[in-house]
Amino acid sequence: MPFPLSKSGSFRVETTGPADQHVAGLETALLDWLAYRMATGVARPDHSISFKGGVIRKINYMSVISTVDSGTFQLSPQGSEIEFSYSLRFTELFLIVTGMVLFIFGPAALGAAVIIGDREAIMRGVAIVIVGWFWLFGGNYLIAIFLVPIALKKVARRATGGTII
Image (spheres, helix red, strand yellow):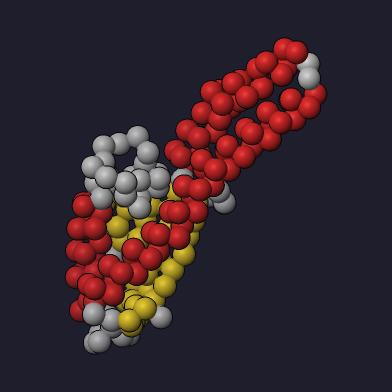
């Protein structure tokens, strides 16, 4: 899925020895990281981890994956490096914010202006609705696409003792 419903990326971890020896430790560290953040539906096919997050679920604090609907981590050992690819989806956040803006904030911002027929007030209301959507969805999306990769690199560095390339 394209922007704004998904984000994909990758980075490489240079390990101190053969990458095959570090993949299992990195997978375990990622599973612990996801468990701490209360991810659900965690599956672990061969050198891959998929999970579900989402806005509508129980969390005990604001987590970097709280706005992520679902995601996949793919680990590919190559010599002394591990290629770490990730894919994150934001469909649930998109639908919830769009629904809130259209059906709650939209009528509140535009209701009286439409009834009165004041063109300037309608334009202000439309601007408020658009800015509100960008604030609610865009802000949460940007926070997630910047913080999740940083957190994943930190997990990878600690689990392998390697460096991020």
